[in-house]
Image 1 (cartoon, rainbow, N blue to C red):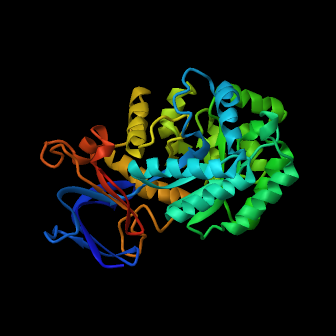
Image 2 (image 1 turned 90 degrees about the vertical axis):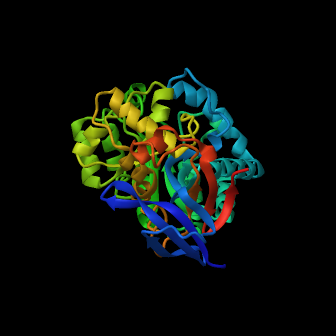
Length: 409
């Protein structure tokens, strides 16, 4: 492709876990960033400008592709929400064509909100999961997608035998290996819907294939009580540990109700907890003790958790993270830290080196943002102004591998 220059205020990692702004330009050629120019904003740039924010595309560490059209089912606790709203919706993925069409619609909404990469759950349906992955692959997005593994405590139409699930998962793991742009993630839904043999098989498969692992952990108190009942008093974290599902490639959604011993085990395993503040509030699950996890050295990511989460924009999810911590009296992250988490931080948590940063050699997955507020001259931290005043309509262009895949208007 021809060389392009995108100029403006570059969102760059200026210290560990912190982003800042540097005036400059990004040079793109052959789908990758080939140069970063700092200190000047070329007037001849192909896109951007002095007032533009140029940032890596956002990364969502936890979402559900089949749940984009059930956002707003408010007032139900988690287990009732799953049985009454989610499982009936996921039944529709019995049709692979429906799954592909829904995935395309979801991807368009993500791109319009600036999300270029994500880790996601599909459903138990093998062919539908494959169709969804092929759809994401065709769009060029970086993603991890998992066929949900589930063999009990759900409606019969969504339960499969352990052997069938593991065979189908192995097939997808071979078709979409870890080095692929779209990779397969071993995805037991959570311990409530998985027997011990299924969890052990999932752990063995992930180890054999080197695959990412994603599941849910300690989102609500009734869920934790149910796990205790099903597994004879073994703690939730130890259920996963005993099945070899805790590793540096494990992304565990929520982690709201964890004790000190749980946190020590997660730290020892180098596992990631995906914080989903919007969904936790929506379902009344509780508020994650973010600083407590950090004090114990537990790695964190951030996810929208669509559809319990109702915010697709990762900027607004990051804002919810700040507000949740502040409301609980917790030490809350700065805007500069929050911007880092939805870009480079989530990329690091998912083990993705090619996205999440503006740097030479990275995939040219980036955003051109044109705010209509005086964000550079308001006398307030510019990154805080953008985060708390964020409007998706500011996204002028979303680029995937240097190609514009969304343009405002």
